[in-house]
Every structure is written in C-alpha cells, then in structure tokens.
Amino acid sequence: MIKNLGIGTGRRKTSVARVYVRDGSGKITVNGREVSVYFPQGEHVLMVRQPLMVTANENKFDVLINVFGGGINGQAGACRHGLARALCQVDQANYTSLRSNGYLTRDPRMVERKKYGQAGARRRFQFSKR
Image 1 (spheres, rainbow, N blue to C red):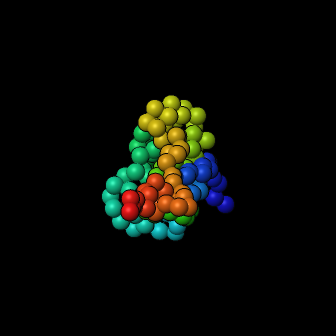
Image 2: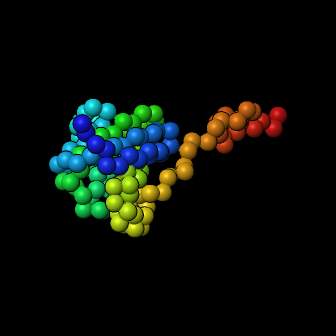
Image 3: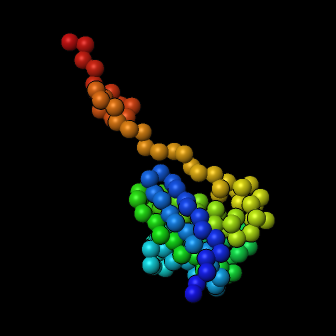
C-alpha cells in the first residue's frame, strides 16, 4: 500500500489541484501523465517544481497531482500552491522558505464578472451624444 506523506489543495483563478506527496525518487505525475508531457512549456514545469527546489526535496518525493478547471497557466499555479501546502504537512521546517517565496499565498486574482448594461466587466457600450 502506498502511503501519502502530505496532501495539499492548491487553487489559482478557476483551477483546483489536489496534490499527494509520497516517498520516491522525484517523479511528478499530473493527471496520469508525466509533468513535462502535461505542461509542454518549460516555464510551467519549472513553476510546478519550484516548491521542491526551494525546500531541497527534488529527488526525495514522488508527487501525484489531479488538476482540473481553468487554463494551462492557472493549472500550473494551482499545482505549485498545492505542492507547497503538501510539503508543509510533510515537514513543518519547510514553512518559512515556502512562505518567504510566496508559494503558500493563494493568488486572489480572478476574472471579474460581466455586468448588465455593459459590453464587458468594465468596458461600456459606445456613447452617442446624438
């Protein structure tokens, strides 16, 4: 039986990621695929790995991530947030380094809703004097 050392929920925009940290060799799986396959852009792969790099746990744990909702950028941010929370559960000593790098803070920026009587969230319809 595989034992989860830490579980974390990460959120960013409309994406939600459930992250499970287990003993292993540093393999990261996102929705059943390798992290570099799921996130084709290197910057997103780097974003997901940042909490492991900061805490020097790159080759100590296997990470299993289930992520849904939003786009690729939001999903990568949600994975990072969830992984940081899970690493705090594994070892409380990781907290200070993760907090100082801002990985434990949930990014509150969301898309503003469209209002009635307007073209968009803030954009107005064109004004006509006559």
